[in-house]
Image (spheres, rainbow, N blue to C red):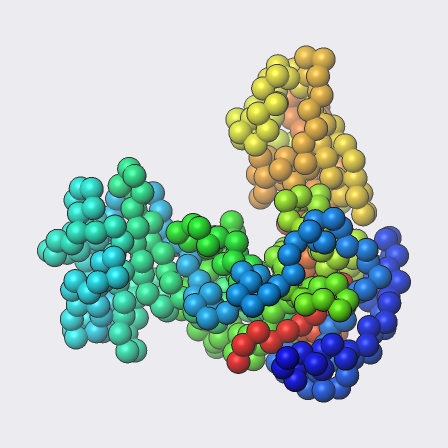
Length: 454
Ligand SMILES: [Zn+2]
């Protein structure tokens, strides 16, 4: 047993009372040994760890998840720190360049390369298992282009750290995947997901949650060709530009929080990472993961119910003064059918009435009811929102009605799904002098900050 683990076991946990509807402020009540605090470096200027919440009763799903053991997939290490980020897909050719020496591997064997730069060339499939890279023919399942030494990969006009892996599916459609160390990946995410003008500790918190989320995705996508997409479907990632723009603040906060992740565990049991969801603006309250992503174990840090005043006054916080948004039901009906096939039995958009169902903290919609042809279909409000359009229906913290042809959205608050960290609120906290630990402790109650690697 390592000294670090001994110290962690010796930590004293003191129960913190959690009131379901008044979670504003966290009220640090656990006392931890100073030695552990010293180990938890990072988050500049702070040495105080986040606190576990032993009084929050774990759910069945939490208890049934096996505890981490050596070699446990829930404990990322070694090559698990290499992220596989899908940059492009569904194309029959890619344009790629390298500004220095490079190697080309096919199915892990070196097939081409040069000590000179690779000019912009096209990689395409010429038939089953046959590829062309510029004028070079290659045979195999998987092509990798590895920049050597300080050279850099360029794909689609954008520079990327790491290397490029290209795979083809059964219909010869290509996917271009950036294989990149998680630290380089996080550096390319921070200012792609959060404005670089946000407070420093908010950006540090962003780096930590982006890293944790990525490592969680890495562990849960082992059987797939890629772990993450470079879009909002996972996290927005723009390669080197994300790390270097705005004076390189993305790279700086990544370096200063290197290896730091958020974890949660029952008292006396090992902690492990969880998917650190985050969003633009909560609108007043965060929501439980169980209402948005029910397949994810609802660990206490994702149980929502955090009352957030820190995003008050920001652009998307309160939209009550905005004119109601009317959205033609027939316009989003095809997407609704795809998301919830049971909607087909209702008789079409004109015959269906849409109404709010259950609500959570602050009145945030949890379900939406659709009634037509004598039937009612209940849908998760967040699924409904995405079918309508996440940039049209900005959040589920909104008043929903139906005027016959349209749904009507009024008195909206916030932007995004509402789970986990509220970015606008994190900026508010940062400007008020809060550290990144304060921010993470507030939005992920009970989470522990852990340095996973040096
Ligand atoms: Zn907020």
